[in-house]
Image (cartoon, rainbow, N blue to C red; front, side, top):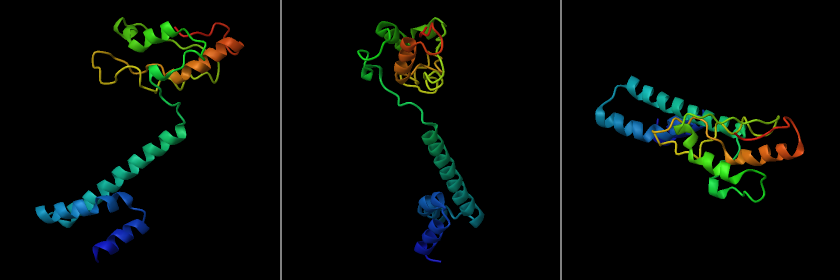
Length: 158
């Protein structure tokens, strides 16, 4: 079977990972004189890896997480939040002092959307254990809940 026929067959079978990795795997196999089982195993691993990556991408798309923003992109003029407090929290100093950040608010205020979003505190900073910094995109919802009286009457960011 010719290369183009193999590539076409992989496309028809929706084996996109194998199709993408085919040339590299075959080239390596010829140079190193791999056994047929090794070649098939490498192609299967390429397909599994591609399917896993596609699954994660799909799951991230349907999760509809709020867009991460940088602290400098957040418009404090339009949000009813304490800018000094938010900028202080953004430094992550509360982590150095082993202090907790508690988000209080009613349903739909962004509390659940904030923890997975990492962007304020440098994730490569090994000196801090920062699994869940707050997202600036959650601030307007928390602030609006505070203003309209929905949920807790003492909604705030501590």
